[in-house]
Image (cartoon, rainbow, N blue to C red; front, side, top):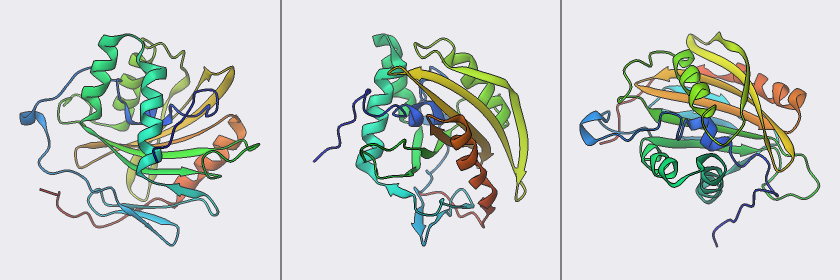
Length: 231
């Protein structure tokens, strides 16, 4: 049975949309612009997420719950409704979704657990072949910030993206927050460019301190030998 996600019930439903840049660039891509192949979604074994195509590993916080494809789809659909606004922007979001891959969805508690302030982690990869001007995670975050400002989500970023090198992978970190269902959602983004994809980790929740704490798990990121793309 499909998972249904209501805005009032899940204040962090827009994570995937904001993390992956869906709608952040506002344009479609054609076949000639696509990178050959596509990334695999990776796998979690003994609490460690690994992605051979993109070449990295990440240790999921102990005790957190990895969610599957149905939850990812439900969050994406709900997030579109929150961010899109008019029909034109919705169509642009649909086009952007075709070049974006959801890699990992994790919640501190199983989604839907009552009476819990849940925190979430999303890992998303977006094909950047259509935007050669985006060379770093900082570029990606700056474009995302500009375009989110034009959406119906009143998203506020603080300061400028800062560089953090994690096992020789150059990430850029940014913090922001927005209002949904009378709650403030706090998000910490980490973005790196890997094999032509913007790989974005986003840590979300309703407590700034708690989100900053979960974001420390990026320290577990390790570079791994990358493989060739899927056909």
